[in-house]
Amino acid sequence: MKNFFQFEQLGTNYRREFIGGLTTFLSMAYILVVNPITLSLQSVPDLPDSMRMDYGAVFVATALAAALGSLIMGLIAKYPIGLAPGMGLNAFFAYTVILTMGIPWQTALTGVLMSGLIFILLTVTGLREKIINAIPAELKFAVGAGIGLFITFVGFQNAGIIVNNDATLVGLGDLTDGNVLLAIFGIFITVILMTKGVKGGIFIGMVVTAVVGMIFSLVNVPTQVVDAVPSLEPTFGAALSPLLNSPSDIFTVQMLVVILTFLFVDFFDTAGTLVAVANQAGLMKENKLPRAGKALFADSAATVVGAVLGTSTTTSYVESTAGVAAGARSGFASVVTAGFFLLSLLFFPLLEVITAPVTAPALIIVGALMVSSLGKIEWAKFEIAVPAFLTIVTMPLTYSIATGIAIGFIFYPITMIMKGRVKEIHPIMYFLFVIFVCYFIFLI
Image 1 (spheres, rainbow, N blue to C red):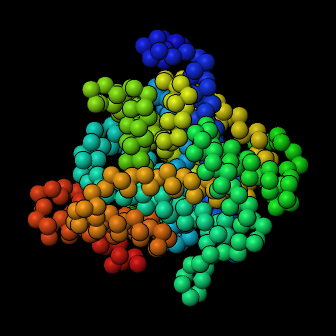
Image 2 (tube, one colour; image 1 turned 90 degrees about the vertical axis):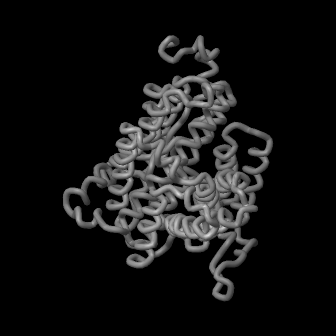
Image 3 (cartoon, one colour; image 1 turned 45 degrees about the vertical axis):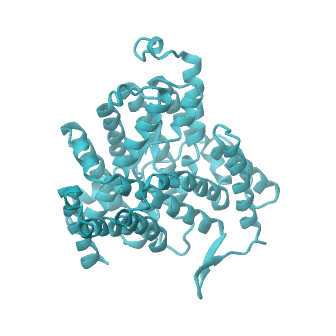
């Protein structure tokens, strides 16, 4: 096994890989709680049950998708990268596709499945490089930052810190409310832990917040720790149902926008994560990423598996850099991470203590981490600044990631043409321009 994972060449050992894999798991573990809450739309009252995904089934799908994705990454690509359903993409799935567009969650899962299959096709055929090069770097950075702001806004909303205001649309919530105070406490604790560089700071912050919530009777005390694994039946295979029973619901302009959004965000988020982790681990060779095709295949295969199990897009986690910082250098660390996700299936009863105020700090802090890409945008160039700014600001303001991407991709060709930089616009951008204009004309 040492030879398979190239321990000697990478200067690592079982102990370092185990600690690195455990650290990556602890840094990602919050998704086991946040994803079921997000996809079941627990923060949205008065919804019909048909719009909500089953909480227990999503938990199992999340853990299995993370375990299988991390295992594939470790064994095939041999990178110390953990995978799980992605933050931002799950918010888009729940709040935009289901809640705003009114698309059934089963059909939304089909969209995830199709985006994963397209991702596999692009990876196998080598078209991924062409697409990456077609999208300007500034818009890639803007999309990441916009999703970060959107996630943060959702976190503040779930915590009750930001509430509806008839006069100004939004306003400050009741800061004397116990649950709001618990969320604020969680934010402070998580910020302190992350600032101090504590491994798994987001996860530990959630645990501390939950314990304090139990002490002050704001969170229910769990009656047991270990229990039988919840049934996967409510979500397993649901992604295949629309393809078999109502294919006309899939092949629409609206679903095309959804599928492209899933594909776009996962595609570039994965590429960025691979480069970040490989750089930190010293795995880059002559500014090139070894086994990049295998890594992207692992990511796309995990998305397909996750969709069939019943969860939103599974993607590579930048939190894996925490594991690398702890010593991980090989795919064995990802295998360790996968093992811990499988083990977590037994601890479903503990999720009873994870309420919206407990998860809100995680959403807010993850959002803060995602907006770091703002510094890479050339704000001094107006033709770049406008589409980037509109992409970022319209995501939270319209409560739609898709709308933010659409507006940015419409304005980019316009500003570039007016600036006389026509030759810098890739033909694919014109295609996307037409798609998103049709989106606003026919769907909004």
